[in-house]
Image 1: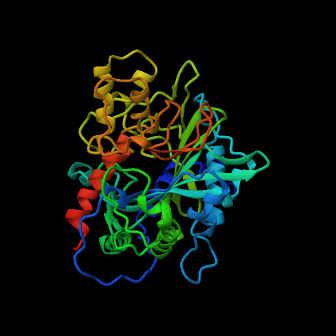
Image 2: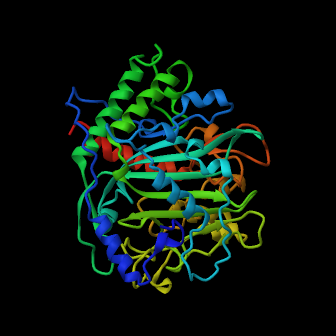
Amino acid sequence: MSTSNYVGQPKNLWILFKVIAAALTVAVGSGFAMVSAQTASKPLSANDVSILFPPPKTAADLTNLIALSDLAGPTGSPHRLWSDEDFAHFVANAENPERSGAPDSGVHRIRLPDDVKKIEAWFIAGIRIDPGAPGLSQEIVAQFGRQPQIRLIIQPVTNGPEGFKVHDTAGHLIFSFSLPPDPPLDGCAPFPRSKPDDDAFKAVIRDVAALRDQLAAGKFGGTRVATTGDMGVHPGLLGASAKPFRDALKALLEKHLSPQRLNTMAVMGLDPPEPWIFVSMLKVPELGFIPVPGPTLDGLHAAQMFSIIGGKHVVPQPSTNNQNPITCRHAALQNPALPIADRKGVSTSAFIDGNVADKRVLEIVNIIADPKQSHFFNTDCVSCHTETAQPLTKNVKNFVVPGVARTVLPKENWNVRNFGWFPSFLQGGPAAATITRRAAAETADVVSFINSQLLNK
């Protein structure tokens, strides 16, 4: 079966809608044993649930990272956590995201080097523990439900004839913890409302808290490590604790994750040296992973592109909906899609493509960085990946990023990393750890929800 062009898509898109609806009604489980309750845990901090690995500088640093090829599936399974089949779909969809017959949007294709098309090249740059995608506000949950996730941010690192290289490419592997969902709201089919498997996810939270406590007690490398404070590279992944803590994180992932929980992927890649192209993918029965049309695009195109040196920097131009009341209607696989005329929103393309006063730039990025207003289904990928680097490098007056260490703020407008490693082809040198305002705001919501709703419950 072909893994491109919607992986052998049905000719009738209504069949695809029904297949997706069926896929999203299947409960995903891995059958791990629940850990027993211990004494009450202290509240978690941002670095406990958004875990950023230090970017490697040499091949020797890879020892302290987690390779995707080394992550095992469930006990007794012959497959890795990221199966060969799913990896093949990831690569094929990255390089050919648009379905057959879609009009040319002007977006380039991602061109992955041959050595990046091997699973051995991919490493975990970050781990995000999230109790509720696409957002945790009451309004978002009412429209979409709540899907707990463990999200792996992955990047390729190679050491070949051209030397050691961290590539300016990234992926998301999203593992969900869900029960059979509720039916979709009117006009929002085929997407049902997610129902959280909080019992399974609470086991994850208990293990995350236990690792935090072991770090604080000096159980990893004989050094006491505190995780409080501004977001940055996780302090447990530095110094003497780095290797044993890395091993503990790997064990946690293998305990709680399975290939069956992986139902969404995304990729950001280059047509070198630029532009950057963004593609999201959804797993459906019989077809595997398919590219998903952008929720803020025209309902036809799956890929969006960001270019610095082109005349038009954001293609296709998004039609966002982050200034209307929260709705589960959008343009991703819904028929009819939410009409562009009915959408009201902002995007960073407004000031990337034109001269905009600082006050207006702040208004735009304040909306995009707010997870109560903006989420995957009403805000475009480029906006969420440029809302910090662009105003910082443009020296926008009064723009601040609370809760993030200055050392990990993006320093170049070429940096579209949200939470991960940025290798600058302009400046050279080692890749830079990066965290944005949007990532910090999402993490703040996550910490608040976990501490009040899930921890010690």
